[in-house]
Image (cartoon, rainbow, N blue to C red; front, top):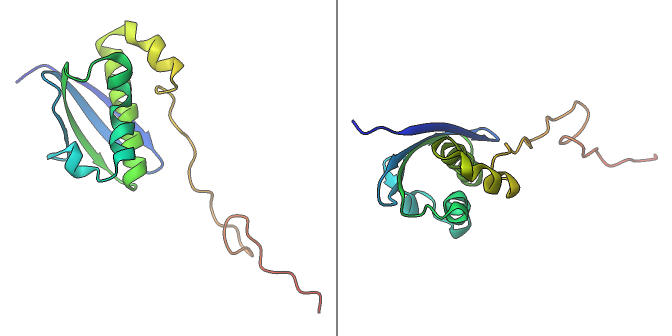
Length: 129
């Protein structure tokens, strides 16, 4: 079996396990080509960001297993995983990835609903009488 570098990326409730193999640039997400798995161009662009930034579009084959969350959360989780794996493969890529903010986990998540409110902050309409 080929040697690989593994990293985990998370966003909201999505978790992505990313494996980088030396190769030609094939990206497979949950046993499908990434173009087929991610329908929106924005999600595909998000996913490729760390590779384009470091100039490694055709250097690694990437295998990803992602679960939980929605399309956007999954794409962001994969992006973080790829960025972390690239850092592990070559420490010289770290400053560029860090400057672009690709190594920071986006901790924003849905705020919980509070009692007496309709949503996290939306209150029922006030009536005087």
